[in-house]
Image (cartoon, rainbow, N blue to C red; front, side, top):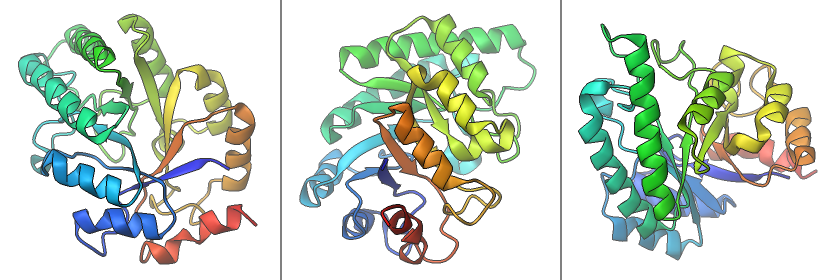
Length: 259
């Protein structure tokens, strides 16, 4: 069975963020991920991980002003300095938390900028980040995100991500494959995972429509999880979904897998 990590940005919202580590451990999770650690002190997050025996699986690079609707700055040629500063900050947190991989959100395509310049900015930023993170022993991921939820998001298909990886030319850059986003943009989940498996370092999940827990939508999860197991994927799968009711009430899908 796959290794599931609780996404603490999405799950256990019944309690405050720092209490979600305990809630995740009590629910049986061994790994956690979340969007950003930067609003909290490194030591208090590390203490939570240690106290509850949890592995920090993933967090994102700083992604601009999230509350104002920004969803990454990596493809914006006017913010390269800010992006590079964010890489350094992400490394500090990842090292303190024992996190071995971080994700880069490309961001929305900036208005009025030549498409070639946007692409080249993204490639150069990834090349810089991949090198800096490799020196710290941390993998860099990039995540395609659907353009229904985030209109204008620059990186939105798996094949596009693979092409960007090739252009960057780093052995420290991988794909974060989010099943929910992929289902909305392209479908063909099993075949796409099989095709790009050597480049996929992390998987996330949610059902569609609704972005709720597995079993609430159209995806055949039993088949897909069995397929992922047979594929030889050994990484974590992050549970990045919106519980349809409470988090604990919606965890029956994990229990069903073990029957």
